[in-house]
Length: 388
Image 1 (cartoon, rainbow, N blue to C red):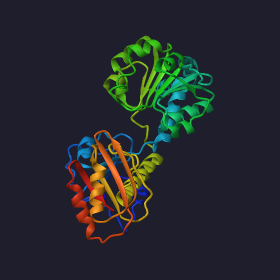
Image 2 (spheres, one colour):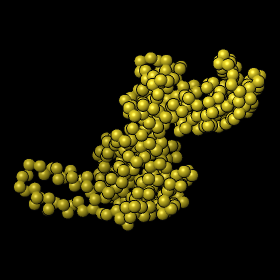
Image 3 (cartoon, rainbow, N blue to C red):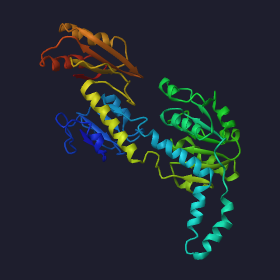
Image 4 (cartoon, helix red, strand yellow):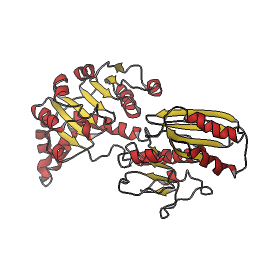
C-alpha cells in the first residue's frame, strides 16, 4: 500500500498490519490511497492494481489510462455528504439574513471606540434580510448530498421541490415524500426562491446556469453551487447579479472573476473540509481497496463496473476484458481444460470493457494459479487477470 497524501489514521487502520504494509518509498506496491495529489504527471508502477480517492472528484487521477491498464479507480460518494449538506444549509440561512455582509461591515467599525453601539444601531437597517421559513428551495440532483439537503430543508419549514431524472432506488427510499417532484428544470426554476445544485460536471450540465435559465427564475433568486464551478456561465452570472435578477450567488469555487462580482459570496472550498468527512472518506476508500484486493469485488468504481459476489474463501478468477462476444465462454473453456467446476459467476459491463468474477468449486494446487492466469491472459481482448 502507498499513500500520496496524509490519510486519516482511522482509514489506514482498516489494513491489518499482518497482511498489509504501508510503504511510501517502494514502487512495488499493489494499491494507492490519496486525496488531492495530482497523479497525471506520475509514472504508475506496473504492480498497481487499484487506486482509491478519499473524496468524490477524480480529476487528479488519469482515469482513462488506468482503465486501459486494468487499474480500478475508486471514489467515496456520500462519505462527505453530511459535511456539504451542513455548509449548504449554513450559507442558505446566513446569506438570506445578509450575515456575511453584516459581519464584514461590523468589523470595519474597529477603532471607533464608544461610537460603535450607535453606529451599529444606525447601520443595521442596510442588512435587513429574509427568513427562509415558508420559502421554496429547489434542489437539482437528489443524490447523497441533495437528498439530505432536501430532507433537512423540510425540517426548517421550507417547501422543497426536487429535480433528478436519474434518481436511484436507494436515494428514493431515503427521500421524504414531502419533497415535490419537478418534471423538468423549468418547473423548478419558476417556483424556487433558492436553488442548490448537486450534479456532476458533464457536457450536458456544463454552463447550465446561464442567461437563458436566469430569465426563467424568480427575481432575486439565491443560487448555491457546491458541486463544480463550471456548472455556471460566469459571464452571464455577473450580469444577472449586477441587474439583481440573481440576488446572491454562493459558491465553493472562487476565482478572480467571482471575487469581483456584485453579491457573490465565495467560500474557500470548504464543502468537505471537516475532520469527520476526512475520516469517513479515508475509511471508505480503504475498505474498498481492501475488499477488492482480497475478494475482487468492486464497489464505487468510476471506471470499472460495480460487481460483487459473496466470497466463500475458495479460488476465484477475476478478469477485466474488452466488452465483446464470447469472452466469458473463452475463460470458462480454459477452466474446463483443467477440469475445474464453476460454483458461481457474475459478468458486468461498462462501455467498452467488462469485468467477470468466477468462483471455482474445486480447490486446486497453488502451482496451477499462475498457469491459469497466463492462459486466460492470452485471450485476445483480455486486459488483466487475477487468481484469488
